[in-house]
Image (spheres, one colour):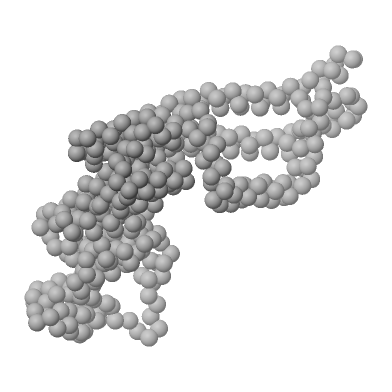
Length: 404
């Protein structure tokens, strides 16, 4: 049995601190709750030199989006089944294996037991709960539909997560193929080309420019492999650092907008994210202006952020939401028309939801088509690379043989 320190609130409202033995903190909390007291906290009583491994693990771990999806869905189901919020949080804490989420839920449970709202507790964990999560929970609390708000949050995060996963999945195949081709090329330059180069030097024949370039690369990698690896690492690190800066990210977005297929995919995926986020916030009872500002923070593309800033300014002046989207080249044509119809019929949230579904399906189809298109393009690229290498290394041999 382990000794625990507990804090409870009696019926009179007075908080009492005491100690109790138990199997774990959950059994102690259950026993205290059975006496009619409100449990505020239960902590294991540690020795002087006792390390808090739970706290250390919580610092080293990170809460994933899929874990938050499960949390919001489960808490919504528990509250609809009649369980209290604090009981639901305690059950979730007990079930989760992530130390960071376990610690977060433990603190949330304590905050709720002290009389705080769930949204106020979540706001203390900005790295775990995003502004949209906190705002929708707050709106659900104010409207009395917290369980519905949690369900909407879970659905919204799940759709966004699956959308990003599909886009990343479409890019994995070409990245793996190109990386493999690059590794094979390096091995060829180090082990195969030097043998052929030595033969050419012995024959003392005139070499084509392409062959000279390949031999120069081979000589460099053979004698300066470490420097080549470091140089490549520096180039990759510089590129990653550049695209993470405001100017670099803006430049990458500028290029992506103008690439065939990719440009339309960027527009559709960001439009889907914008529509679903805005629809979820409005459905939960969040005010229009606040919903627009939260949606702006959710979007990562700077071009879309700028447009949402304009939307906020126009709406604040009394202009309809659709006024910014109609004829806007950043957004697909359907966005402005659907929003305008939603405003006219008074069903803006529903129309935005339908818009999100439409573009999520479009992105799904586009990623499938992208995979189909990328395969033959990669084959052409690989064939061209192999052909260039083969011709560069074989043509001098034919030249020598023709002179014999």
